[in-house]
Image (tube, rainbow over all chains, first blue to last red; front, side):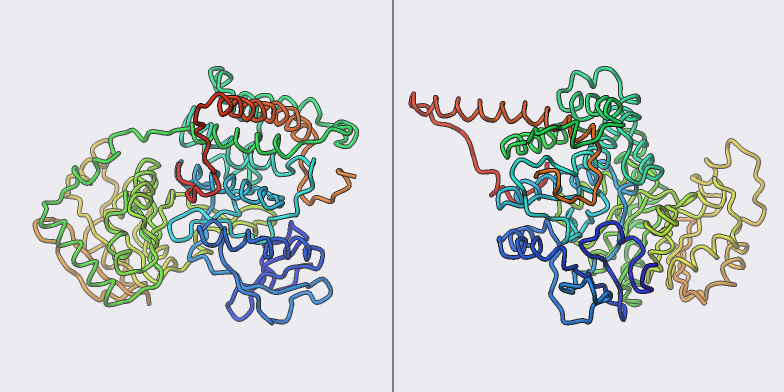
Length: 460
Length: 60
């Protein structure tokens, strides 16, 4: 049984594991990994990767080990402000995570090391960029040895990216079901025949899937015989994966794409008024972590971001999240994390014993939650009663900035146009009384030139 | 012995075998490209190969 302080997601790799002590995260490096660890640190690879932001830095500490018998060293990695998962990333986020993995592998090969795994869960967004968080992913490269992580890379990165690019961007949701990446036979069946004319997809997905079926019961040693894979061949494989992934594109389309803020019910002055209020409240409450729910392309998340507050900027629309991430990249923003999140069915706890990947709630609470132009979508489109909404928001964070959008607002009218109004309590009075049980209202401001009201609330 | 190196990740038999085949093919391509580059140098043409290691960006 795992030690009480060992992190439940950290059990697969015998090289070491993560544990938490006194609120600080440590990684135990086991003795069996000593040679690989020394090579990583002495070859200059660690320094180079950290310098260019492809690997999170760590310090070696003299903390007592969590498991004395197997311990070689205890390191303290830099803490990632918010852990996100591949099924919560936009197309370009997953693509950049894939390219970061391949870039690390190429650099590792140059100094005689190789990645022994290529899990998308080992990548996180740190200072706006994809970086490897598992310091123990490297091993000393043995000339002639094929890449153990080839299958994992194809399942975790290439398969979902190909499905998103060629079939439908929403297929990234399959990663929630298939925690070790999307099976290649399934990917091959879902992809159209024309993808067979793409050399990379033909080989790394279609032929790869057939080979898996054909050799399903074969023993690796006897099936591979004495065949080896030269370093040049290895590099050829990595470059081929890289070229295939670089060529995959997804162009966000749809009515919401880029036009959302043009069709809201705001005059320029109302929009500015809303921005100023949020900025003022962020500065007054000084949160460390802001969770913007229904952030669209992140306009209001950036207000918190501008005050150097780490902000998770989530939305249900893949196009909005994609646009948000492209802005993060273009402007080199370091404290904003765009995230794809369906609040009506947020990320659950997943994996072995439901303890490998945390639910959205387990990764909280945030210091401040922004729920702007959101409540009508949850209360009316999704029929969630107001008291349940208050309950949910109170669990998600201490401070809540929430905008009440009344029925008279044309956006709400649009939602009600195709259905019977079964929401008699959806009024400003109904809203206030439902939220009063869980929150104290600190400020209430009617937004200028608008029918909407903005509240700053504190959880009781 | 190459396959005696312990790996914690199951590489999968099919994935293991097929990557050797694909990679050998791709490696051959790289080798041919390198020879072609050398030939061009011999005949006085400038080659346009750059070191990828110093491209410090992963952005596409």
